[in-house]
Image (cartoon, rainbow, N blue to C red; front, side, top):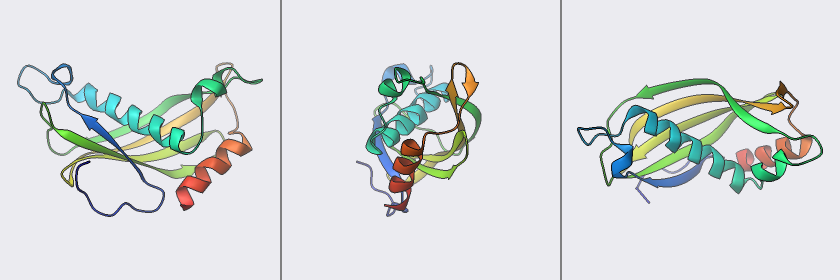
Amino acid sequence: MPAGPVLPAGTRRHPVRVYYEDTDFSGVVYHASYLRFLERGRTEYLREAGIDQAALQVGGMPLVFAVRRLSVEFLHPARMDDLLAVETRTAEARGASLLMSQRILRDGRELVTAQVLVAALGGGRPVRLPDALRAAVRQVTEA
């Protein structure tokens, strides 16, 4: 795992290796690849919180998450074979959404920062976050 500063409370870290398929013709990570890395970080964050997204989709009221807003700042490039760390935390749990703060680091150096608003949807419409999901996220945030 790449070295980095001590993680702030509630932050989870997920390692990602850069492969050839993640890069452009110059060997630098293609900008859209970072979106996949961020998605993996959010998915692993929820998994660590005990939230099974596949189970949410088949429950009594199927629930899925959709990115509603995404703000990304690209600070430094990553290259093929780099080992990156995707750090994810919940900045805010709202009625039907989660605001996630994320960053991607290499050897402790911040390469990318992102703010992602993820909406909870049921039947294609916004739905309130279930209490159990909200509690699981709160538990990770306060850990």
